[in-house]
Image: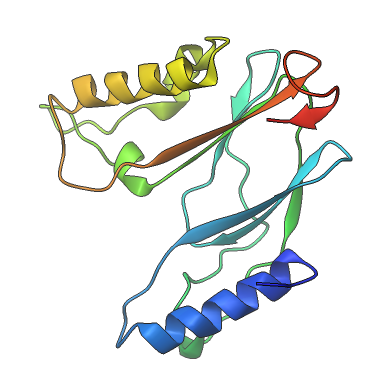
Length: 168
């Protein structure tokens, strides 16, 4: 799509998804625009909030200012999401994931404690860091589980392997 901003892209996606899906089927999604001013702008369509791990090791889950319906449900009413900026600085990491990650249960029925697993993302190699998190998730669930469990890790490299001040 050739849209000037996330809201325009989100509107086009909403129309496309609504045209393709029937009844009350829907898709949750987060659109992200990584900007050069040390921010990532997020547009959240009912998706789990991403995990933001700061360079100092602290973490949070940036929530949108207001809840919005998933893609495909705009005809049911309610406002669309508003884009919101989140600081994203060198050394920060942003983990986008599906609900299959946080809803994975162990043998006692406990959900996967993603917020407690940020230490697994410390490996300098982003692929190994994400693999460590995936392996921990599989151990937690005592093997493969039946829901989707996709993860995408964005790491702001700063001067550590990319051009200075650019996200990787």
